Length: 225
Ligand SMILES: [Zn+2]
Ligand SMILES: [Zn+2]
Ligand SMILES: [Zn+2]
Image (cartoon, rainbow, N blue to C red; front, side, top):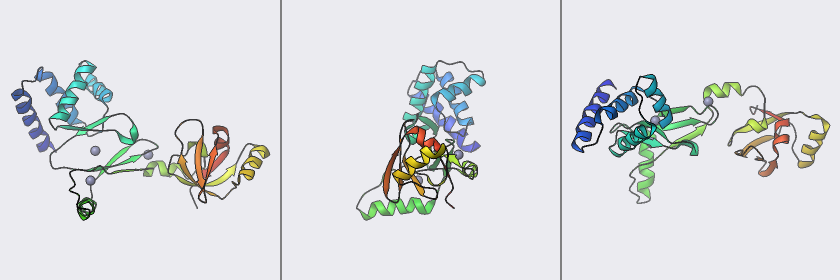
């Protein structure tokens, strides 16, 4: 990677000077600090790292430089899970894909040549000439999964999770309400949506249920046995 980064800096110097881009030295510092991280950073996070390294640059200037870095192919941006824009290195010929934990928001990189080939084949089989793709796997990372051995309130479960109802708290009132809805302990639940802090939609046996926040907190769920 050291070698690659050295080449990136040389090309950056060449391109930015050739294009007469202003404040070259400051922009070069931003590139250097950016290349020292191996993360998927927001503009604000990069500004923070720059400040820690002793570079006080205006947010607008850093954002502008990031924009240029994307335009000239030194960085690429991605909006994972409809969240904020994140930037990462863009190294020529070094494609990778991402796994994103919906719980702790960690981002993991991977590359699988069979998967890459398969995507090309699928596209080609439709007479489609693939130019690029974005492969993002959303789920729960290994660390977060360890925590899931404990029962959690259904309200805290993430979209797409499949869990089992372990316990219903909140007295007989809540239990009765759930029973009349047709939900009981041992049911396997799939979280269809759980975005706004209000209602959530779950599915049990191909049927959808809308639950209010209060009720969702009273249902304790855990890993499917
Ligand atoms: Zn890929
Ligand atoms: Zn996680
Ligand atoms: Zn990445």
